[in-house]
Length: 110
Length: 116
Image (tube, rainbow over all chains, first blue to last red; front, side, top):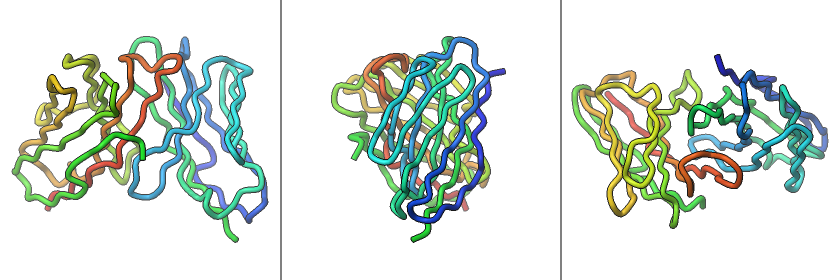
């Protein structure tokens, strides 16, 4: 069964303390891995899509990487406004849906 | 602002009632997706439409139905509502029907449904 697992469930950082979030997947024939940011009560905001192992993408303090089994979202020198839930989702060949992980709730303290 | 518009933003209704949630996709997007997010569960895929036709079905209850109209807006109908149907319902859209290369899925801000 296709699965997406995110870790940790929650992460608390001090401002400026870099860290990484993990998304591991068991999907045959991955067609894309998406990262979204979600603020409480809001819709998921698109961050990145990765398609093949070795691919990397950056946006401001965020950098996403992809291997054959997992993806990392690296946060460099985070700020309090980076506090949110970060969601990982995969697309499988047999469907057009996104299958989401449970998310990592990130809190950055000033 | 993702460009996906959902109405209403909030809705409170009683058990047994029926509600309709509305979604306008981003300009140019032909595909519409509906997702449910409840407190104890992550984002669950319900159904997808592409250019008016149903393309994929997830864990959508028989009490729920959806359609996409010729102007590409979509409606999600929820009937015989139960307390457990209380959740955030998201609509998302994309240009093509398959989230492959370059086909990003953008989400709306959601419709909060509370069943009392």
